[in-house]
Amino acid sequence: MITKEEIAASYKQIQDEICVALETADGKAHFEQEEWEREGGGGGRTRVIQNGNIFEKGGVNFSAVHGNLPETIKNSLKVEQDDFFATGVSIVIHPNHPLVPIIHMNIRYFEMPSSFDFGKEPLRWFGGGIDLTPHYVFEEDARYFHAYLKSVCDAYHKDFYHRFKTWADNYFFIKHRDETRGVGGIFYDRLTATEDTTWETIYEFSKTLGRSFIPIYTELVKRNRDKPFTEAQQQWQYQRRSRYAEFNLVYDAGTKFGLETNGRIESILMSLPPTAKWFYDYKAEPGSEEEKTLSLLKKGINWV
Amino acid sequence: MITKEEIAASYKQIQDEICVALETADGKAHFEQEEWEREGGGGGRTRVIQNGNIFEKGGVNFSAVHGNLPETIKNSLKVEQDDFFATGVSIVIHPNHPLVPIIHMNIRYFEMPSSFDFGKEPLRWFGGGIDLTPHYVFEEDARYFHAYLKSVCDAYHKDFYHRFKTWADNYFFIKHRDETRGVGGIFYDRLTATEDTTWETIYEFSKTLGRSFIPIYTELVKRNRDKPFTEAQQQWQYQRRSRYAEFNLVYDAGTKFGLETNGRIESILMSLPPTAKWFYDYKAEPGSEEEKTLSLLKKGINWV
Image (tube, rainbow over all chains, first blue to last red; front, side, top):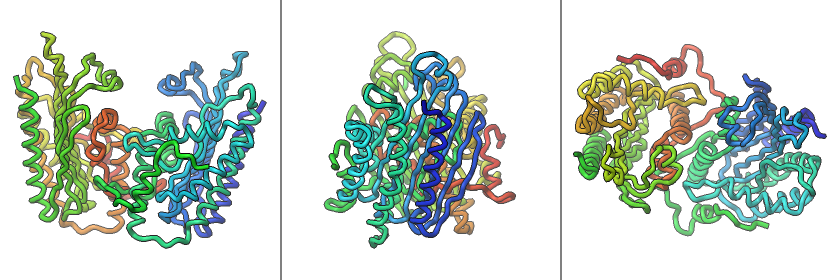
C-alpha cells in the first residue's frame, strides 16, 4: 500500500528536479520560493521564475493540503466524508518568445483518509496530464509532443494514450470560443486501480509523466528559441494568452477547486499570463499563420 | 402597461445618446458598430471605440434577444416557462490614463412573455446599475460619484440608494482577493412593482440612470485626464485591469448568462481590458498610493 506521505515526498522531489533543470535551461533567472501554510491544514512550496532569458513567468508549485471539504466540493465529488488529503505538482510556463509554446503539467493525488476505515475500497485517485499551448502551432512540434506522451503512456497501459488524449481534447476546450486551448496532450482524473492496472502502476506512471516534463519542454524550447519574430507575432502571443486566461478562470477545475477551498490565491493564479491582450473582434487574415493556428485548435486531431 | 417594444426602443435611444456624447468627449476615435443576430432570436448593436485620446477600449452594447432558456438558466432563475425576452444597454470603458477610472453601466429588462397569459402577475423585472473602478481611488471622486447616484435614486424612492449601494458592494466583490472591484456604486436586479413603486416609476428610474452615465463619467474624465502620470502608475493600471478581468470571468452574472445562452462572444467579452498584467505576489509599498487604494477596496464605505 503506497502511503500519502510517500506520494507527497516523491512529488516534492520531482518539483526539485524540474526547478533545477528549468533554471539551467533559462541561464539567467532563478526561482523564488514561497513556503505557505493553508489555514485548514497543510501547505506548499510555490516557486516562480520571472523575467528570464526564456521564461517570462513560470510557476512550479508543490502542495500537500488536508482538511475539511466545503459542501459545494463534497457535492460535486459526490462524497460523504468530510476530510480530504491532496498533493500535487502543478506547472505553467509562459515564455517570452511567441514561437515557444506555453506548457502546463500537473500530477496529483487525492484521498479521503477517513474512507480507509470503512473496511471497503478507500476513496483515492490520481489525476494529471501535460498539455501544450503554442501561440503558433507547428505541426512537427505537436507531433513530437504527442509521440513523446504516447511513449510514456504505452509503457504503462496500451489504452492510456488514446483515452487520455481524448480526455485532454475535451477538457482543454474553450466552449464559448469553440476552440481548444492548444494542441492538447493528455489529461486524466480519478484514475484508480482496476483489474489490469495496479495502484503501483498508476503511481509509477504519474512519476514518469512528471519526469517527462523536462525532456519534452527543453526540446521544444531548443527548437524555437532562436527563431526571429516580429512585433505582430508578439501581439498575437498576448492575444493567445488572453484565451489562456479565459480558460483558466472560466473552466479550469483545479482553479475552481483552489478558489472554493480558500487556497493560496497567488499559487492558484500563478498560471495567469504576465501580459494578456483582448482585441475586439479580431479576425485572422486569410492564409496567415494565425489563421492556420486557429484552424488547428480543434478536437480530435490525430498527431501520432 | 409598458410594452417590451417600448422599453427596447427607449434603451436603443439611450445607446445612441451615449455614443454621441462619448465620441465628443474623446475628440478622436469613433464607434464601430456591429449589428448581430442571435441564432435563437433577436439581436443587437455592439459599438466599440478603440485607441482614442481618452478611451483605449470602450463598448456600448444594446441588445434585445428572445428565445428559449437553457435548462441551467431556468433552474437558476427558478422559472418554469421556456421563453424569454431580454433587452438592455451595457457599457464598459477602459481609459488610457491610469488616473481616469474604469466605469460600467447597465440597464436591462427581462420578461417571460408566456407568463402574461396566466391571468396572474406576469414574470418581468428590471435590473441595472453603475459602478466605478478607479485604478487609483480618489476620495473626492468617489464622493462625487456616489452623491450623484444618490440624487438619481432619491428622485424615485427614498430607499433605493441605500438598498442598491449595499447590493453593489456585495455584488462587485472579488471573493478570492477579498477586495471590491472598485468603489462600488449601485446595483439592482429583479426589481418589480410594489405597493409604493409602480412599473412606471421603475422604468423611469432605469432611463434616468442610463442618462446619468454621461454627466457622471465626463466629469470624472475632466477631473483627471490632464494629470501627469508615471510608467509605474501605468503598470499598476494594467494590474488593476487583471482584477477586473478576474471579476468578469469568474463572478459576473451577465457574462455567465451570455456565455451559457450562446450570446455573441465578442459583445459579451468586450468588457475585458485591452491590456492586463498579472504580476506574481505583488505587494504594495507601505504608505504608497497603491496601498491606499487597496485599503479603500472594501465593502460598506459610506461615501455620501
